[in-house]
Image 1 (cartoon, rainbow, N blue to C red):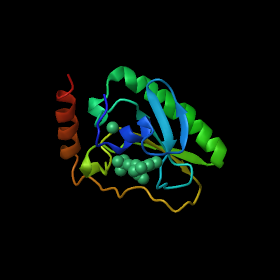
Image 2 (image 1 turned 30 degrees about the horizontal axis):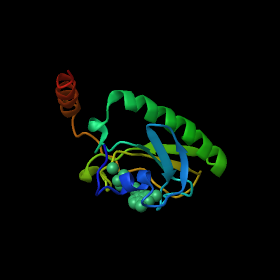
Image 3 (image 1 turned 45 degrees about the vertical axis):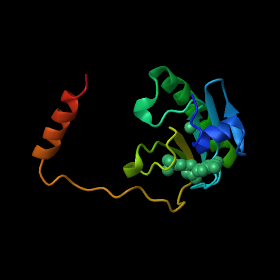
Length: 139
Ligand code: 5GP
Ligand code: ZN
């Protein structure tokens, strides 16, 4: 399953060059062209799935394994102090390429990147109701 207009499908097919790190029969991993920090890589399934919910569960296991293996190598290679594993799903969450992918971002003490802004719940009825609502939607 491949999408002709998808930039990551083109990378997998070799139509667009990339700096490849690792691959299995189902997974591909390469350096992000616009790294947050040098060594920032992407883990993607070879088949085209748009986002988290489109990914088959069994593929999730392979992706998780690749994130661990490649993430460890990135930390060693860059002498990083930490690693962010991030997935953006849908435009509102910052997804720009609609071929599911996980970012592996090496992090360094005092590298200047900040966490997103957080807020407080004005009263505890709200999180109580939300947790109940979310929970009730899980089959
Ligand atoms: P998103 O915002 O969708 O989670 O992240 C997409 C990522 O893909 C971005 O970090 C961007 O730098 C990276 N990217 C976009 N086009 C290319 C490309 O042609 N080659 C590589 N290696 N990375 C790309
Ligand atoms: Zn694709």
